[in-house]
Image 1 (cartoon, rainbow, N blue to C red):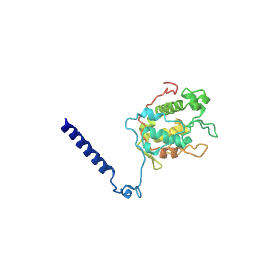
Image 2 (image 1 turned 180 degrees about the horizontal axis):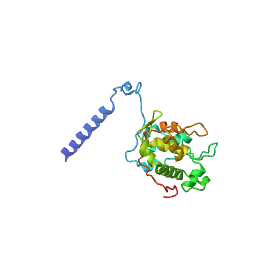
Image 3 (image 1 turned 90 degrees about the vertical axis):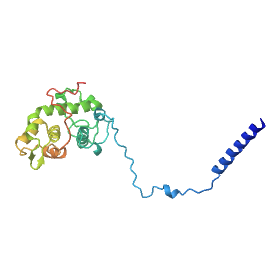
Image 4 (image 1 turned 30 degrees about the vertical axis):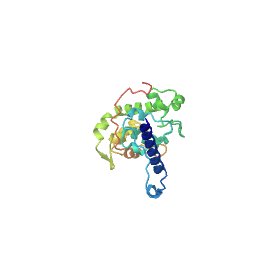
Length: 221
Protein backbone atom coordinates (compact mmCIF):
# COMPACT_ATOMS: atom_id res chain seq x y z
CA UNK A 1 0.00 0.00 0.00
CA UNK A 2 2.83 2.38 0.91
CA UNK A 3 4.54 1.59 -2.41
CA UNK A 4 1.39 2.51 -4.35
CA UNK A 5 1.08 5.82 -2.52
CA UNK A 6 4.72 6.58 -3.19
CA UNK A 7 4.26 5.79 -6.89
CA UNK A 8 1.27 8.14 -7.17
CA UNK A 9 3.21 10.91 -5.45
CA UNK A 10 6.18 10.50 -7.81
CA UNK A 11 3.95 10.56 -10.90
CA UNK A 12 2.06 13.62 -9.64
CA UNK A 13 5.30 15.43 -8.82
CA UNK A 14 6.73 14.64 -12.26
CA UNK A 15 3.62 16.02 -14.01
CA UNK A 16 3.76 19.20 -11.94
CA UNK A 17 7.43 19.73 -12.80
CA UNK A 18 6.79 19.24 -16.53
CA UNK A 19 3.85 21.66 -16.49
CA UNK A 20 5.90 24.27 -14.66
CA UNK A 21 8.78 24.01 -17.12
CA UNK A 22 6.54 24.21 -20.20
CA UNK A 23 4.50 27.17 -18.93
CA UNK A 24 7.38 29.19 -17.55
CA UNK A 25 9.34 29.36 -20.81
CA UNK A 26 10.54 32.90 -21.41
CA UNK A 27 11.32 32.40 -25.06
CA UNK A 28 10.19 35.52 -27.00
CA UNK A 29 8.04 35.12 -30.12
CA UNK A 30 9.28 37.00 -33.18
CA UNK A 31 6.02 38.56 -34.43
CA UNK A 32 7.72 39.86 -37.58
CA UNK A 33 7.61 36.32 -38.93
CA UNK A 34 3.82 36.54 -38.98
CA UNK A 35 3.45 40.03 -40.46
CA UNK A 36 1.21 40.61 -43.52
CA UNK A 37 3.16 43.68 -44.58
CA UNK A 38 3.74 43.75 -48.32
CA UNK A 39 1.22 41.02 -49.04
CA UNK A 40 -1.72 41.51 -51.41
CA UNK A 41 -4.71 40.14 -49.51
CA UNK A 42 -7.73 38.88 -51.45
CA UNK A 43 -10.96 38.32 -49.53
CA UNK A 44 -13.08 37.42 -52.54
CA UNK A 45 -15.25 34.36 -51.93
CA UNK A 46 -15.86 32.20 -54.98
CA UNK A 47 -19.38 31.26 -56.00
CA UNK A 48 -20.64 28.07 -54.36
CA UNK A 49 -20.48 25.31 -56.96
CA UNK A 50 -23.84 24.09 -55.70
CA UNK A 51 -25.65 27.33 -56.48
CA UNK A 52 -28.39 26.83 -59.03
CA UNK A 53 -28.93 29.12 -62.02
CA UNK A 54 -32.58 29.45 -61.05
CA UNK A 55 -31.54 30.77 -57.64
CA UNK A 56 -29.19 33.29 -59.16
CA UNK A 57 -31.89 34.43 -61.57
CA UNK A 58 -33.85 35.97 -58.70
CA UNK A 59 -31.24 38.25 -57.17
CA UNK A 60 -31.93 40.59 -54.28
CA UNK A 61 -33.50 43.97 -55.02
CA UNK A 62 -31.10 46.68 -56.18
CA UNK A 63 -28.13 44.30 -56.43
CA UNK A 64 -25.61 45.69 -58.89
CA UNK A 65 -24.26 43.79 -61.86
CA UNK A 66 -21.13 41.80 -61.06
CA UNK A 67 -18.57 41.27 -63.84
CA UNK A 68 -17.65 37.91 -62.23
CA UNK A 69 -20.81 36.36 -63.71
CA UNK A 70 -18.95 36.26 -67.01
CA UNK A 71 -20.75 35.27 -70.20
CA UNK A 72 -23.38 33.11 -68.50
CA UNK A 73 -27.10 33.74 -68.94
CA UNK A 74 -27.24 35.36 -65.50
CA UNK A 75 -24.30 37.52 -66.56
CA UNK A 76 -26.27 38.51 -69.67
CA UNK A 77 -29.40 39.63 -67.89
CA UNK A 78 -27.51 41.37 -65.07
CA UNK A 79 -25.28 43.25 -67.54
CA UNK A 80 -28.37 44.33 -69.49
CA UNK A 81 -30.14 45.37 -66.28
CA UNK A 82 -27.12 47.39 -65.19
CA UNK A 83 -27.15 49.26 -68.50
CA UNK A 84 -30.91 49.83 -68.31
CA UNK A 85 -31.30 50.92 -64.67
CA UNK A 86 -28.11 50.09 -62.76
CA UNK A 87 -30.06 47.08 -61.49
CA UNK A 88 -32.75 49.08 -59.66
CA UNK A 89 -36.07 47.23 -59.50
CA UNK A 90 -38.01 50.28 -58.31
CA UNK A 91 -36.94 53.01 -60.72
CA UNK A 92 -39.02 54.76 -63.39
CA UNK A 93 -37.16 56.76 -66.04
CA UNK A 94 -38.14 60.09 -67.56
CA UNK A 95 -40.06 58.34 -70.33
CA UNK A 96 -42.07 56.17 -67.96
CA UNK A 97 -40.15 52.90 -68.46
CA UNK A 98 -40.33 50.70 -65.41
CA UNK A 99 -38.09 48.66 -63.17
CA UNK A 100 -34.81 46.85 -63.39
CA UNK A 101 -35.15 46.07 -67.10
CA UNK A 102 -37.01 49.26 -68.04
CA UNK A 103 -40.20 47.83 -69.52
CA UNK A 104 -42.79 49.91 -71.33
CA UNK A 105 -46.44 49.35 -70.40
CA UNK A 106 -47.33 48.14 -73.91
CA UNK A 107 -44.66 45.42 -73.75
CA UNK A 108 -45.86 44.35 -70.31
CA UNK A 109 -49.39 43.85 -71.64
CA UNK A 110 -48.02 41.55 -74.36
CA UNK A 111 -46.63 39.23 -71.70
CA UNK A 112 -49.71 39.32 -69.49
CA UNK A 113 -48.98 42.14 -67.04
CA UNK A 114 -51.63 44.86 -66.77
CA UNK A 115 -50.92 46.43 -63.38
CA UNK A 116 -47.73 48.45 -63.75
CA UNK A 117 -47.77 49.63 -60.11
CA UNK A 118 -47.80 46.07 -58.79
CA UNK A 119 -45.14 45.14 -61.36
CA UNK A 120 -42.84 47.84 -60.02
CA UNK A 121 -43.19 46.50 -56.46
CA UNK A 122 -42.50 42.87 -57.36
CA UNK A 123 -38.86 41.95 -58.19
CA UNK A 124 -39.74 38.30 -58.82
CA UNK A 125 -42.38 39.31 -61.37
CA UNK A 126 -39.84 41.57 -63.07
CA UNK A 127 -37.45 38.64 -63.44
CA UNK A 128 -40.21 36.50 -64.95
CA UNK A 129 -41.13 39.36 -67.27
CA UNK A 130 -37.58 39.54 -68.56
CA UNK A 131 -37.54 35.80 -69.30
CA UNK A 132 -40.98 35.86 -70.96
CA UNK A 133 -40.17 38.87 -73.14
CA UNK A 134 -36.82 37.41 -74.21
CA UNK A 135 -38.40 34.06 -75.09
CA UNK A 136 -41.13 35.80 -77.08
CA UNK A 137 -38.50 37.84 -78.95
CA UNK A 138 -36.48 34.70 -79.58
CA UNK A 139 -39.51 33.11 -81.23
CA UNK A 140 -40.19 36.20 -83.39
CA UNK A 141 -36.54 36.41 -84.44
CA UNK A 142 -35.87 32.67 -84.77
CA UNK A 143 -35.28 32.82 -88.53
CA UNK A 144 -33.07 35.90 -88.27
CA UNK A 145 -31.04 34.24 -85.52
CA UNK A 146 -30.55 31.25 -87.78
CA UNK A 147 -29.64 33.36 -90.83
CA UNK A 148 -27.42 36.05 -89.28
CA UNK A 149 -25.62 34.61 -86.25
CA UNK A 150 -21.96 34.17 -87.19
CA UNK A 151 -22.00 36.96 -89.76
CA UNK A 152 -20.67 40.49 -89.40
CA UNK A 153 -22.54 43.74 -90.01
CA UNK A 154 -20.56 46.99 -90.02
CA UNK A 155 -17.70 45.05 -88.42
CA UNK A 156 -19.82 43.75 -85.54
CA UNK A 157 -20.10 40.00 -84.98
CA UNK A 158 -23.75 39.03 -84.83
CA UNK A 159 -24.60 36.75 -81.91
CA UNK A 160 -27.86 35.51 -80.45
CA UNK A 161 -27.36 37.43 -77.22
CA UNK A 162 -26.67 40.63 -79.15
CA UNK A 163 -29.86 40.15 -81.15
CA UNK A 164 -31.95 39.52 -78.02
CA UNK A 165 -30.45 42.49 -76.18
CA UNK A 166 -31.18 44.73 -79.17
CA UNK A 167 -34.75 43.40 -79.26
CA UNK A 168 -35.14 44.32 -75.60
CA UNK A 169 -34.03 47.85 -76.45
CA UNK A 170 -35.90 48.45 -79.68
CA UNK A 171 -38.37 45.63 -80.22
CA UNK A 172 -38.07 42.56 -82.43
CA UNK A 173 -39.39 44.38 -85.52
CA UNK A 174 -36.65 47.01 -85.41
CA UNK A 175 -34.02 44.29 -85.04
CA UNK A 176 -35.38 42.52 -88.12
CA UNK A 177 -35.10 45.79 -90.04
CA UNK A 178 -31.52 46.26 -88.88
CA UNK A 179 -30.42 42.76 -89.80
CA UNK A 180 -32.24 42.53 -93.12
CA UNK A 181 -30.95 45.93 -94.20
CA UNK A 182 -27.43 44.91 -93.15
CA UNK A 183 -27.17 47.77 -90.71
CA UNK A 184 -28.69 50.51 -92.81
CA UNK A 185 -31.77 50.84 -90.61
CA UNK A 186 -30.26 51.36 -87.18
CA UNK A 187 -32.90 52.25 -84.58
CA UNK A 188 -31.95 54.85 -81.97
CA UNK A 189 -33.92 55.40 -78.74
CA UNK A 190 -34.73 58.73 -77.10
CA UNK A 191 -31.41 58.71 -75.24
CA UNK A 192 -29.36 58.06 -78.38
CA UNK A 193 -28.70 54.34 -77.80
CA UNK A 194 -28.72 52.30 -81.01
CA UNK A 195 -29.39 48.70 -81.97
CA UNK A 196 -25.83 48.47 -83.21
CA UNK A 197 -24.46 49.54 -79.83
CA UNK A 198 -26.45 46.81 -78.06
CA UNK A 199 -25.44 44.24 -80.68
CA UNK A 200 -21.80 44.93 -79.86
CA UNK A 201 -22.06 45.49 -76.09
CA UNK A 202 -24.01 42.29 -75.37
CA UNK A 203 -22.30 40.02 -77.85
CA UNK A 204 -21.28 36.47 -77.00
CA UNK A 205 -23.34 35.65 -73.91
CA UNK A 206 -24.90 32.22 -73.44
CA UNK A 207 -28.65 32.62 -74.02
CA UNK A 208 -29.39 28.94 -74.68
CA UNK A 209 -31.41 28.96 -71.44
CA UNK A 210 -34.12 30.90 -73.31
CA UNK A 211 -36.53 28.83 -75.41
CA UNK A 212 -38.50 30.37 -78.31
CA UNK A 213 -42.06 30.81 -77.09
CA UNK A 214 -44.70 32.62 -79.11
CA UNK A 215 -47.12 32.81 -76.17
CA UNK A 216 -44.68 33.44 -73.31
CA UNK A 217 -46.34 35.08 -70.29
CA UNK A 218 -44.73 36.42 -67.13
CA UNK A 219 -47.82 35.56 -65.13
CA UNK A 220 -47.39 31.81 -65.75
CA UNK A 221 -45.64 30.16 -62.79
